Image (cartoon, rainbow, N blue to C red; front, side, top):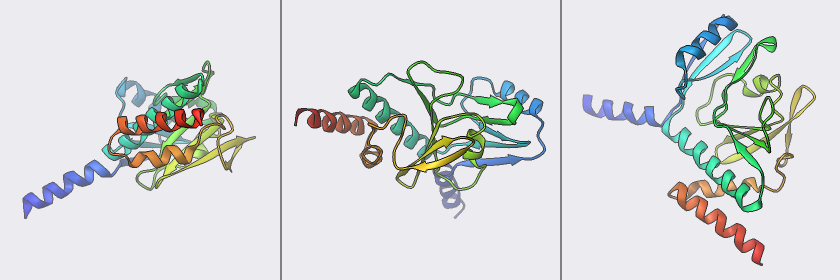
Length: 203
């Protein structure tokens, strides 16, 4: 019985993101924690006006985000888009008390102070409101994957509005990207994407 419980616990750890929320964290303490963590990719940190979220993503979370990244990069390559990826680039702005580390982020062409697009995978519910963080960091679009669908949020003034498709990359078929996540491997997904795009060009 104990062995079964241990196996069940291990499976949960693989599929559920682990989060810790800390309150009344000063900006200098947030900066110190970033420095202590260094170049490690976890835990990912999100800071919002004194509240700090520490998140260790599950394997499933990381699989979805990595597959999306590979598909988007292959899509950009096929269409000749100057797409620059920066992974979980630490974005922060002390004056607005905001800090975030997206699952993936991209600029179209040369990067500015912030990426054009941040991608977030909502694998496990809960945590800080990422849109409330990103809006004061100035990220123009946030793509939120949730349960097989990518919702596009476009920054208008100081608020995000839901959009039917990306405005920065309107040529990308997000439904197609999501449909390929069910293939057995990332490589198979990328190959299928390239095949479909090339077939479309030749038809």
